[in-house]
Length: 191
Image 1 (cartoon, rainbow, N blue to C red):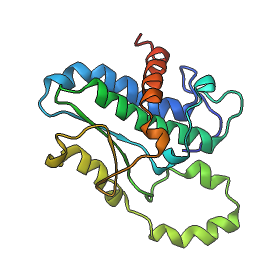
Image 2: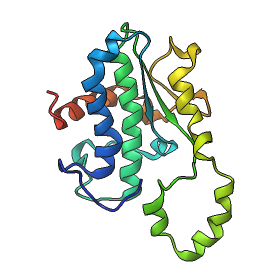
Image 3: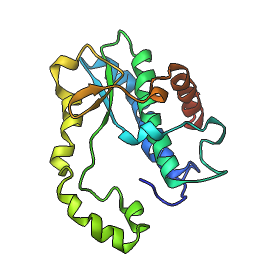
């Protein structure tokens, strides 16, 4: 999350590579097995940050103007779009897909962001860490999407606090979801 400019071994921008392309490739490698298993689910942890995201199709690896926050938001929007397109591709197979915002959780996810924050801000915000979710609390929506029986006939939706939420408008763009799918498949050599 919001790491300095960095690349994966394959040359992808780190946040896009880890947060989207890794999930995309793993899921596609498992699709045949998922289709054979009864009531399979694909749960992708996105973020509220997707609301600030835009997919830079002309500079997907953010090579021209890297910004850690912009890159993170792009990767989290990619999670939402991936879930939508995967749901479309898996209609009628019994495999359902969900993306979600787990909440703000007391983990080290923000370590790169916090390291650049002035000391006075870290001191001021330190007491707030007790108001955010514990890791166990933060896992609840992921668990809900993975096991809640009432969701077995729903697919492609976005969740937060164990309930469906409307994704940002750019997360509901089926044309962008298809375009991202095709680009991602090309990037990881699936086509």
